[in-house]
Image 1 (tube, rainbow, N blue to C red):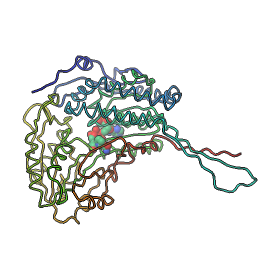
Image 2 (image 1 turned 60 degrees about the horizontal axis):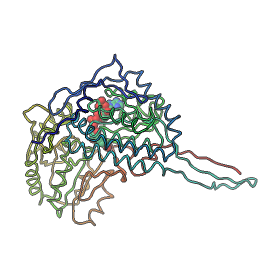
Image 3 (image 1 turned 60 degrees about the vertical axis):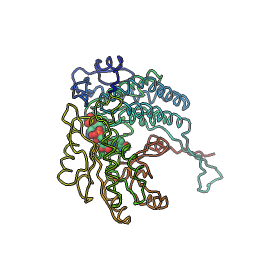
Image 4 (image 1 turned 180 degrees about the vertical axis):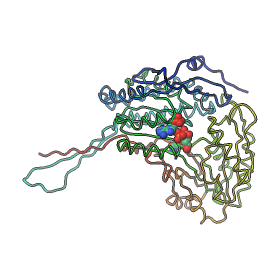
Length: 495
Ligand code: NDP
């Protein structure tokens, strides 16, 4: 047992009265609903956060708009980059506090909170900081003939769109929020974040750190509350862009709300039912390691995680038995225990959903290992391997967002592309083979925003990430974000 000590600063932070962060200051309406934050590992209350009032919502958007037109607009790209870097430094300097808070609210293992929520957040921010000085337009020569000897010249400018509404899910709240903060700040936008009601505390702390870093008040605001607050935020006439990450049903509603509000531009990073395909020659030990790392990490609550695995019939028993042996070694317990690999599911609704899918799997498929909730306090379920015999089984079709992978044998590689693409989702996929030529021929045929070869769920800020089909619209990372956070303005000159 190596349970870590909770920092005094974390204990003190939990005791505070939490609400919103608007115009550089904490704000807390006295007459709105309070949301209880529950530790998913113990089911004990952690803290409360007050939902935003309509007046607070208006104040947050107004402060973001003021900063956008005012102090933030006066900063040069170089200064914006410097401030984003300073913010990243402070996230690292306060990393243990952020990691502990996030682990307490989300049940994520403390290792993951330190590595992904803190370190990778800081690294992503630095990536975006580098872009601040590299956003440019084009110079163009108009092609129509001149009428009276006059000449023309033209250029395009990339101008920040304005106030961004960043709507964040609970699974990686710090990291995903920082992707949106980095993109908004690098392009010169300001942002109002709406965290998930389950994980609001770290984003409130981030907003304080932004002020400490010297980012002007109003550039980053945080509004808390249930989905309705997100919806009101999207409907606000001064919101110029929505950057949403979450489930497909909510994403569809968000897209419709944004269109109806003001034709508000919208990017949607949504769920998946991601396929991994193991060809007959695949290195099984490597695949087992890869599935352990990516399919079960954070109890499977990762949007790009493999949830359907197609394995050549000649290798499926070897794969599932080695994977089951690997899972049996992994310790389940408190996410604050450094020797633990599996913590709880992040919240009660998600726990109920995963339990429902486990029951469904018992009825329709074969459970190879796991399959049950643990009889203890907290939202714990066993990491589970399901063997499906048909692609029409529920666990081969619906996103479980839990530590449950369904494996299905296939006989003929010509069936594989049909099986991989037989899904309304298209977020990610992976191909596992030693035959690079086969993989390269499959890649263009796979309907997914990202295809990995001999790995899965490796997300890097230099590589665009997003979904096809119902998994989303638009991309984060690479240079792709620039189009979504800036308006292309054309300027024409006559001389
Ligand atoms: P939800 O769609 O339930 O919620 C996402 C966010 O939207 C939350 O902040 C939620 O608030 C808010 N929200 C809910 N209703 C509305 C509304 N009508 N208008 C505006 N905002 C609203 O997703 P989860 O939080 O459950 O996250 C899990 C899902 O996110 C999975 O499907 C996963 O695949 C997907 N995801 C996708 C990623 C990607 O990059 N493609 C990355 C990570 C997750 P509240 O929580 O208070 O209801």
